[in-house]
Amino acid sequence: MPFDPASLTYDAKGLIPAIAQDAESGEVLMMAWMNAESVARTLETGRVTYWSRSRQSFWVKGESSGHVQELVDFRVDCDQDCLLVMVNQTGPACHTNRRSCFYTAIRGGDEVELMKPMEG
Image (tube, rainbow, N blue to C red):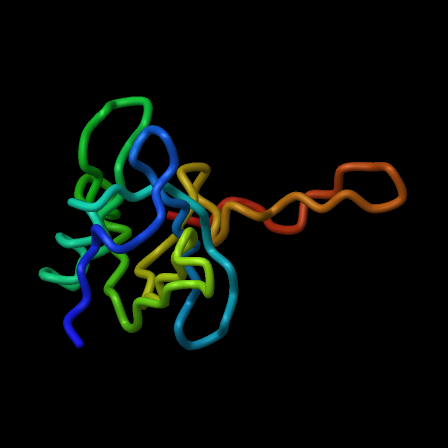
């Protein structure tokens, strides 16, 4: 049965959260937003494309940084209101130059930095 991006459940702004996970290691890399068109572009091109809320434009991950996300698998959750994009990540996924955006833990009431920015 063919998939239609319009079948997903989007919020009032036409957006759906998308979690990017490293296809090989299982590491959660980042969370960003997609709309129906960025979902379609991701599936058509194999390059993960998000919707930038701040710029109000499409954002192909790695287009300017070179830190691309190649789509390996595209999954929809049971309520069809959240996406999981399993990717091959080149370089850091986070704009802070870290492998993952989830580099801060709260432990014993304190913020703990789990990873430093990548070199180069």
